[in-house]
Image 1 (cartoon, one colour):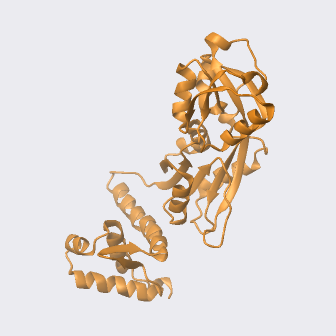
Image 2 (cartoon, one colour):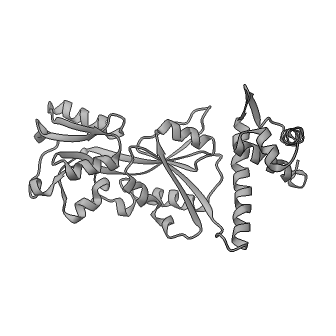
Length: 309
């Protein structure tokens, strides 16, 4: 089958059913019979040579091929809607970039990474966060274009992934300037018994810190463990405790003098990765971000995210 033989009317019907998830309701919305709608979708499946839906009880569920076809249909008809909107003066033609990031990743880091796109009037960004496995599932289902993570993933025959190293940065111990200005600690040797807030057990750097303290036979007094970096930033700012985190999380507080770096260890590093699928649509703007990261020095993070002096 070549493009001239492809029936976009059938694809449109599939798109509407896939988005609505209900055959009868979609038929009513399109003012066609349910049998006619089913026949159109069957014809599309016959043309493609693969099933697009499978039934689970009374529900229609997309197959893997259906998920892929839906991702293309979203682009085709989404762009069509945007084109009509632009011609009618109600919207601008846009390119969507869908970025997922693990919940433990600093939002400051994420913003710094996408910053080149923030001044691009032709880009619409979709940003979401969650657990890594859930984001990877959405990635392989073509519902995300890239996932930002602070731990690498490996590809396997059932889930082909590309994991690109973006850079790394040292982890710091920070504290309120009112208490710690001008003071420094050896990390971890001087942390014994000191009140401290740490990233939660799911964060990639927590195991590094715990191992460092165990090796040195040091036991800080744990006051909080927090998965969400935005909340850890608030605790660092308001608690009066020392906090272990990437400096990019509190870059504004370090800059305005509310917090100071109390110590660092070269053995504590957070690494950043961009995860994509090999079969995703190539997006020029995303490729620029990935290539720019790869061309940066191996120990670098985006310029605005570099640890502050």
